[in-house]
Image 1 (tube, helix red, strand yellow):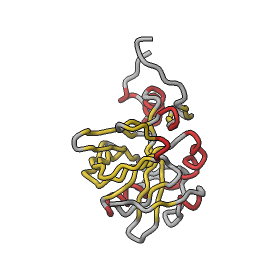
Image 2: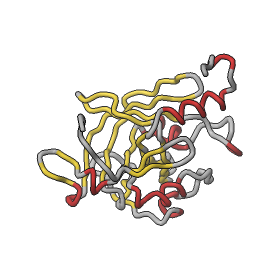
Image 3: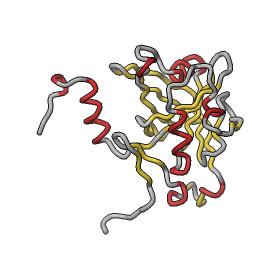
Length: 198
């Protein structure tokens, strides 16, 4: 089988992409509005953009469902405040992460809705997720519109890791972390690790 994206609907192309680019890491992004309302939402179009200086990128699509045709609160907040935090989602935080993915009104505190604890950041205004073992404070570098989506690039200005997940020598204990991955409509757990060649 082969497909010409120009001959498919946007939804069908999306299904092919998210079923093929897997598993994807999840950026659990916390922001704050100009009114001071905290926001927390997950994005699985997420990766490292640069190692020097350290930059991370997330792609934010348009609102869906009853919020179709609008921009997501995360994008609005990042544009206005120029700051955000990327929290790493572990398998044990899956249900809380799922709760924050719901289309909640802009004035709702997703931390509270999901039963999570806020933690003050060191440099940026947005709060960190205390329950997440890794949090990366970011300052906005640029927003690039790519078709229907917006690529947000942030410079990491502070890295936090729970002592229990730090192996020393700047290495993360991935077996303990068990990061949650996004598949097409489901999720994956990173629980088994191996080196190549076997």
